[in-house]
Each structure stands twice: as structure tokens, then as C-alpha cells.
Length: 111
Length: 112
Image (cartoon, rainbow over all chains, first blue to last red; front, side, top):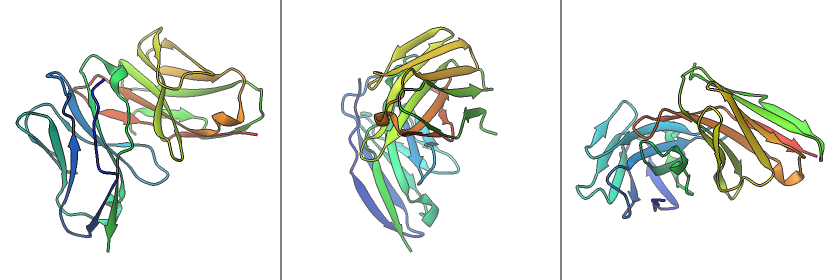
């Protein structure tokens, strides 16, 4: 299974941009890059996902390196509500069994 | 609203009793998953399903069984609950990797 590597924790100030990195050097050509977050006492929540091109949605942006061996989740303006554990996960289109979580990055947002 | 519901939300049971947790979806997604989450271990995959009557084991499947007799329901059964199975259980659904995954709100199970 393709694996990802993320920093254990990061800190950000409120209203500043946050860049959360993820390394996935063994990614295959058909793997999608997914990002989820988990707020305290809640289930994981979808943030964004992509294959090759950068992606934007109302929550965040996903920047994917040209060689696809790394990606960055960008929160454009952190709020206190963005404090959560963020998970970067790789999964193929037809192989649902590959949806395995790592430890993720715990993001703290300082007021 | 998200098309996935878990029941019950909370359950306390005694050691040695059977327990069944239910995950119900209204999205007609092919893939369904059961995870458990414990402090210090993060989310761990128990079992998953890739279609009706098609299931397979995840990384922590010992002591658990699953069944999927119809697309919308994925049942997780603890045949004889043990205290080590005290945990929060999450169900997830997906149409495949090109789509997002949606998680349920979780079931908090306490085995006493």
C-alpha cells in the first residue's frame, strides 16, 4: 500500500494561511490524494482530494507537486474552528481497501 | 443529511455478550468501511465491503465479523465483547477513490 508521511503537529496563528505538507514518494499513477480532518469528538470530515492538478474548494486548496510525490493542503485563512487532526491518504479508484489512516498532523490555531 | 447513519450512537454492554452495530447509507455507494478509534492509535480499519456480500479484513479484524446483505446496510458484530473492544466505531462510505469518503458520526461502545 502507498504510504504517506506528515509532520506530527503544526501551529498557526488565527487568520493566517496554513500549509500542511504530505510526502507520498511511493504513489502510483492511479492513486488519488485525499485530505480529511477530524475535529475533537467528531468523525473524520472530507476536506479535498485530487489526482494530478491543483484543486480548490470552499474549504481549502490542494497543491500537488509535478512528480506527485508530495502535496500540500492550504488553508487560506485559519480560524479557531480549523484546529483538528489532518490526514493525508492515498487510495486507488477501484481499491477501496487502501483507505488506511496514518497518525496525521495535529494543527493548533492560536488566537 | 450526509446520507450515512450509525446506530446506536452509544452502547454499554457486558463482557461476553454479542453486539451488533449498524451502518446505513442512502447514497448507493459501493464501498463501506468500519474503523475503530482509540486514544494513541488513531483510526484503524476493521473490515470493509466492496459490494453486497463482498467483504474483507482490515488491519484489526480479530474478534469482529461483518455482513452486507444489501447495498445500504453494513453490520459490524462483536460475537463476544471484550473490554479491549471498548472504543469509538466509525463507518464510512465511498463510491471509489475518485470520490470523497463520508464518515458517520460514530458509535461509542463501552464493554464493562
